[in-house]
Length: 505
Ligand SMILES: Nc1ncnc2c1ncn2[C@@H]1O[C@H](COP(=O)(O)OP(=O)(O)O)[C@@H](O)[C@H]1O
Ligand SMILES: [Mg+2]
Picture 1 (cartoon, helix red, strand yellow):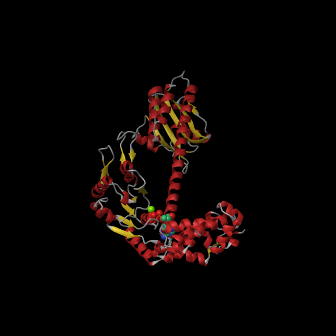
Picture 2 (tube, protein in one colour; picture 1 turned 90 degrees about the horizontal axis):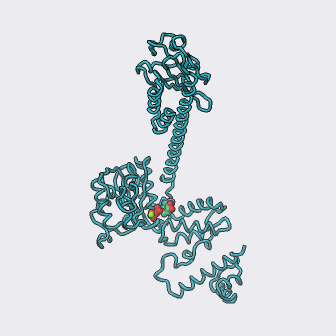
Picture 3 (cartoon, protein in one colour; picture 1 turned 90 degrees about the vertical axis):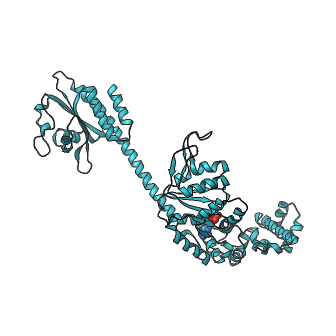
């Protein structure tokens, strides 16, 4: 029992199965005076038994000892999956023959021995054999010893099964990982960046120039212009594309957290640091670190970041070990960094470190030709996503889209189109499917000429339209919804020339 416990522990306590098997055999020798013992495994391809672990032999003897299935005593055990017991080895010629018929000198017969060979099986299928030589004793209980070795063999089999399961799992995860990376790459390659206006083509050109180098890239431009998209495109077109792309939004994290997020911490660095944690710099090792909204980074973290950029190394919070990094940095901001410097909000030295290769993302209103392409792209995307048969955008709606000034850029356009897809009940997106901000001339950016009266009128028109929309053109219900009379609604409909019929089902 003590040996079995020992064997179990040896097999369970390691990932190195070969090493564990050696320890198992050593234990058999120590506790049960097994003079020689060997575990052989069946090679799936050649169908030969090959030594996996052995104890009590000279090494070169062991390496040569291969058996074909059915050959010799061991080959027979592997074939039949039944144990064989040889009480006196000197009387069993099969034990002394090697695979080419020559005399095998592996076992010295200075004194008589018994040999026990048991199969190692998984689901009753033999995967190898375990055999052992013990000193011959005329009154020895070989049956008992055979049972004992069979138990050891089944434990060994179990260990192999677990190992195979783990390996299969690992392989599955590796395959899945390759597949996911491929998917990511496809999602972020140039093909998925829409637009061929000349400002955007200039951006593509810059991305191509800089992607394959390790240069730090600074992406500037208003919110929603596609900076993050470009950061991805740079990574997936670089030599680091198989390594991680890690993003940190500097504006989303409170000052107290950002440093531990970037650089990680050691156990006990502060209250609550119960385990050591790697920072994003470490996670991005070999790949790309994308620092979004860098203009919002606080001054003390700016100093630390500068040091990392200069020395290419850092320490975790509360740690002394210096960590070297190989990370490509891409940063983005919609802030006017020069003004931040003048106001003392951004360090000039850091600015020069980051401002190596700058790409300006043009606002959408400066590339009107992209609006149509993007709108069509998003229409297709969201029509598919929401399973709607919408085919196109009407000409007046296109005019509204192109004359609007898009302060939220592509992100706003994307949201606008998704909303239109949701409210659209036919297969064409019309002007009234677009949000109120686009409905009026004021929406197109001429906000300075807007008078109070016209603003109120525009607002009034919008909410009446919305009410009519939700009541499917029923004025009485719309009046109730807006807590007014049907007469007033009727008057306003005339005044604003609202076409109620189009809300009717
Ligand atoms: N040229 C483009 N083609 C397709 N989608 C775009 C394009 N530019 C931006 N987008 C989309 O618009 C949204 C905002 O882009 P993002 O990269 O997050 O902008 P930023 O980081 O500048 O705020 C994202 O959903 C992005 O996929
Ligand atoms: Mg962004």
